[in-house]
Amino acid sequence: MMRRFLMRRSYNKGQWSQARTHANKIIHLPKEKELARSVVIRSYFNEGLFAEVIHCNQKWGFEFEHLSEKAAYKLSLLNPTSQKIFDPRIKKLHASQPAPTHRDAEWDPVDLCDNFIQEKNRLWMRHPHGWTYWDMPEGYSLEKTHDALLILATEVLLRPWEPSTHLDSTVRRKTGERLALAYSGGTDSTAAVFTLPHDTILGYHRRNFESILDHRNAQRVMDHFEQNLGRVIVDIPSNHELIRTFYHKQIGFSTDMACASHLILLADYYGIGAIAFGMPLDNTWLMKGRKFRDFSESQYLKHWGQRFARAGLELVLPIAGLSEAGAMKICESEGILPYMNSCLRGNGMEGCGECWKCFHKNGPLGRPYDIEASEIQTFLNRRPLPTATHALWALKQMGHQSQAPDLQHHMEEDFSWWTCYYPPAKEILPERWKAGIIDKISKHLQDMTRPYIIESVNYFDE
Image (cartoon, rainbow, N blue to C red; front, side, top):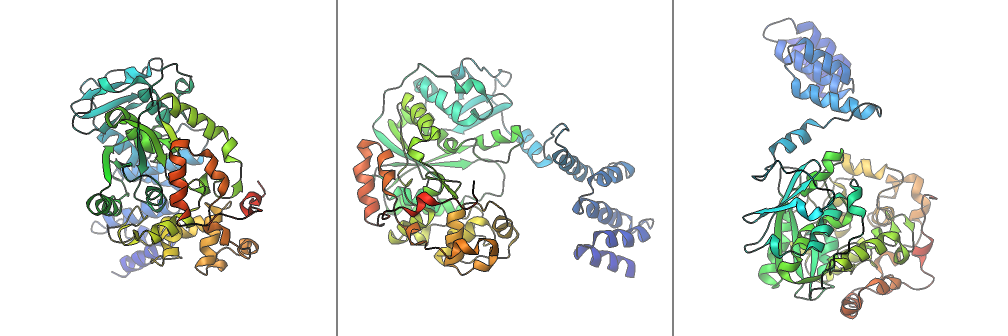
């Protein structure tokens, strides 16, 4: 039928109003009703007419309830004064999560340690909106885990929302001997591996619920580290990245330190006395990669350094003085690139080619990416530009200056310093690890020379 053809063609071209016009011409026909209704309501959704979506769903006997729920969620985002509701996908994730046998226990904001229970190898933590868990190694014991570790783990997961986690604690743990790294499998944390002692524990957090994140790329490099390089891998499944979603945030880590919650909780089990993070220059001396700050004097470093110290843990930031580009250089010279890929959606051999990581992590390494991909374009058009210094360096490196014409004057600058090491970063390294880390970095990168160009970085006059 011609009208069906015209409806489909208009819809596929994104001509929403025209598609509805054709659909309404055939919506009364029994054989066409189902498809026509779908086109009408979905075209309203795609056009952002969410109230019409809800109205159509009610008119048609709640036939499109899932789409109506998504529309209601979108409307709540558009109206700051309305009560926030959950995205249907997040609501479904919440409902599908397991709970311990004693699920009726209430969140205790006074005795934070009282929120933890263990059932077999699964460690549970009660939070104000439900439960989160970690699947621990054989022989792990909550009873043998120091209270200071439980308190710190609670803070890294709940600090943005729970004032009770801000209180100073008198509980202190004796410092352990081993060093562990919160390892993600990406470029930065892989570069960090090569700056630390060979016996460093590589602690991988495995998101244990359905999402777009694919662990196969990370698994490939971890297999190589374990099987060919003799590295110690600790792989802990957990669902704690859902905690943020109860506060209407995207899935992810509650704080920068939350990626190490499993290592904090395992510190007594492995005798850990220091935890390292693959946090590069882009997030230390540069605020969000675009404005210089004296990170060594920052409240951020002082706070977390003190909190970790109370739990008998030194905070180690081995690559705080080198950029994402410097991390790439280390990975390349260490010969790890054939086994490593930073893309979180890759298939274990390559990246998706369409995400921001594929652009600014894989692109400079000569790996394929689509500069016109929706996500890449979205990031490139944001102002301030995300990870600005590295993004500008990458655009210039790959000949894409035209993608950010308003920032052309910055791309005319000399970025040779971006693959060098910022010497003041040496001063924040704990003494017992400092010499070894500096020695390993110096084999790969030269020091920046004075005057340090990084100290004048402020691309957006903030």
